[in-house]
Structure formats: C-alpha cells, structure tokens
Length: 549
Ligand code: NOJ
Figure (cartoon, rainbow, N blue to C red):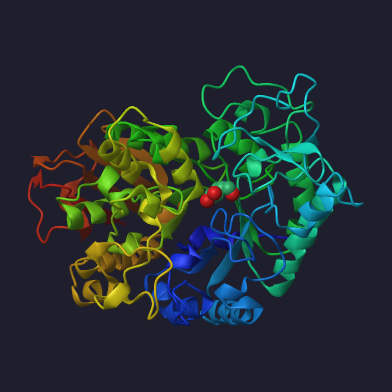
C-alpha cells in the first residue's frame, strides 16, 4: 500500500487511562472521561492519541499484563465506550493508536492457564524450562522488575520466564502459532478502525537460542541475550508483510538500549519493519541508564541525545520526540527548575517541539505537573517501585530511601490529571483509585485556561506554530554551541524558511549568543516565554526566531 506517512504531521497525546479522567464516578479514569475530554485534547493541537493498555487485566502492572487482547476492560467502559471514543476521535479528524503488549501476557490469560496444564495447542505458547539437576534456575537472567526472571509453576512442574513481573509470563515468539495470534490481534483492532500501535518492549520478543547465561551485563542480567534477539527482524517483517502493510496504519516501537545505528535496522523508511522508535537516551541526562541510578542533570548529555538522533536519522527515518511518559518521573523538576516552574516548563516544550519528528505529550505535561512525593512507601502502587524500595539502599535511613523513590518511581508521574481546584482535582466525583498530588490547587487545567501566560497556553501556541511551519517537518537540524552547559541552541533550515531556537537552562541570566550566519536584523521572534527580548537571556528564557523569504 502506498503510504503518505500522515503521522509526520501530527502531535500525539498519551493517555494513561486510570489517571486521566473518571467519567462514571467510580474513582478510576475511564473512556467516558476520555470522551468528555476529546475536545480538550484537540484544543491543544494534538491530533493523535496513544492509549496505554485498556484491555481486561488483573492490573499487576497497571494494564501491561493483559488477560484478553480483544476486549476493553469493563472498568474503562468496555467495547461500547471504546467504539464511541474511536468514532469521536475520527469525527474530529484525529487518530488513535493502541498499546500492543505481546512480549508477555498476564498469567491470568487463558493461554497461560492452558499452557501450564499442557493443553494443546497452548503447551509451547510460553517459555518453560525444567529445574536444573543441581536445583538452580534455568539461567541467570534478571527480570526487569522483580528479582530473577524465572518462577516455578506448581501446576506444570516447570519454571516459566518473565522478563517483567512474576505475573507477566513471556510469550514464546519462536512458536509460529503465537505469531499467528499476534497477527489476529493486529487485524482485530485495525479492522475496527484503529490507526496503529505503540509496541511495548518489542525488541525483547526474540530470545537467544538455548537461553544462555549472561556474564556481561551488570544490571538486568540477560538483556544482551533477549534485546534485539536473533529473529527479531524476521518476526517484525512477518507482522508487517502479513498484516500492517495492508492497512494505512503506523507503528511506534518501544526499544530499551537502542542507539540510532541499531534503530535504523528497525525504522529505516525503505528497509525497516516499523515506523518510529521510543528511545531512552533522552531520559538519561540525569541518570545512568535507569531512573533508579540518578545523577546530576547534565544539559550537555540532554543535548547530545537530542542531536545524535536528529543527525543520524535525518533523511533515513523519522524521530519520535518526547520528554515524558508513564514510565518516568515528570521532566520539569528533573531537567527544568521548580523555582522557575513556568519559565522552565515552557523552555522544555520549545526544546523538543521544534525538532524533526512526531512529538508526544504525556497527560499533565502540558500544565507542568510535578512529581508526587508520598510520605509513606506503602502508598506506592507500582510493582517496580515496590520491589526497588524493598531491595535497594537498605543501609540508608527510611527518609533517604523514600526520597530516592520520589526521583525514581514511575508513580511520581501517575497521579490523576489535575483538572481544577475542586475536590480530587476534578478527576473524579468518587474516591480516586490513587493519590492526587496535593499541589492541585496551584497547578490545574482550569486555572491555566484562565491565565493567558500559562504553560498550557504556551503549549497550544508552540504546537500551532510548529504545524504552521514547513521547516519543522522538512528543514535540516543543526545544533549550535554544543559545549555550552547553560543553553541549548538549534536551528532548522530549508530553502525559504529558517528557524533558530534558543533555550536557557540556567537559573541565572546568561549572555545571548547568536550563531554565525544568522542575521538578527531580519529575524522575527515568533515565540518566547518572556514579554520582551533583551541581549541577555533571563532564567530559563526561550525564544524561537523565524526567517522567511
Ligand atoms: C514498558 C511499558 O511502558 C511499561 O509501563 C511496562 O511496565 C513494561 N513495558 C512491561 O510491559
């Protein structure tokens, strides 16, 4: 099918459903709530929605443990509500993508129930191994969430592999029947009119033959033996050939530990099997590889990550741009400054919205939501956080251990969206399923709607500007002053249009530096977060200059 790659002109909004908006008063976000807010999402200039999982699930990993791929969970409104949302999205000229989680299922999925009882054809749907004669586990791999990657199943009398939580057994993608199941799932949603998929840890689905021990990797032992495994490209090509190529859809692959060179094997526009990739380097300017190993924020690391992807994908593949999602604490207190909350929230927006690629916003990012800081570790819901809290920094005081979680936990960014100043931030009329950040009276959508200078309105302006300028889609990217520890400056250039983006990441005033060759006399400042422009940059000041022929 001839593709016009419509996703290149879009801006996506990620909905993490349980905390977005409750429409029926049971305290849990749902699709009725989404229906109420479609116009709001559209008003941001977003024309696509990515739903984190909304399928039936026991909720061991907030929906990333799926018990039925072809249904919508009743607590979210079931299929009936979903059809209405899909129609509402399409009548507004928007698109909708689903989360496809096929590295693993829930242990409560029917396939697993049957597999553990060795009922055909499900016997080999998962990765089962007997205990070793010496009583050891089948190999030395770690799960990404909870200790070792193997759990003993009494029913079957074997170990099963789970690269995530104990309740998330890995599927055996080497089994052609499992791949057929994946294709059925893809077709089911595409036939209903869904526009594409975000594919959860898709680079993990092919494990090295023989599942050998790993003696290389210090953390997440085993990763080199299943990330980008031997048959990954073959399986993805099969999904593309048999299903995706027959629809006008797009795919976004989540890929831990991937750099542009490797990414191109997946997303090269001519030879790849997928369209875009969620990379993690942009999240690692203040940590080493994971949020659980935090370091001081380094602007240079952030810039390097951004520019590396911009340069290396140019002309070959398309970038997915993001600052936040449901797997990381909020970006503003990490890369910006709570002291300069409004200024830095806007600068962060500008720092990524004018790069080449398709931007994604995570719910609440557009109002500058901050991290939630519970006073008791028992308040955490997330399986990864609870495990990490129980097993790390054990020699430190309880206060220090808790503070470390504030910086590392995904729950920091999973509190309900703050809609207004009323009880529970207007998220629900019932009892919220999770804690509301107590700062909701200062940070909420309703107040920001009233304030023309808010972060919310700034996002709207920036997105509208981005969409009005062909140079953002087509122009060449160049970073200037890469060694600067205070400023991020980049330009986008094409024949008749040129943009210069200047962002200060300093709490102090800094000198304005203009790269050579930019004639400021003929420039128009088309976006800024201070009312007037001088020849120094104030804290977290940002500006976008435009030249047109
Ligand atoms: C990545 C998802 O984004 C995350 O939320 C989930 O816990 C893991 N994959 C496992 O599915």
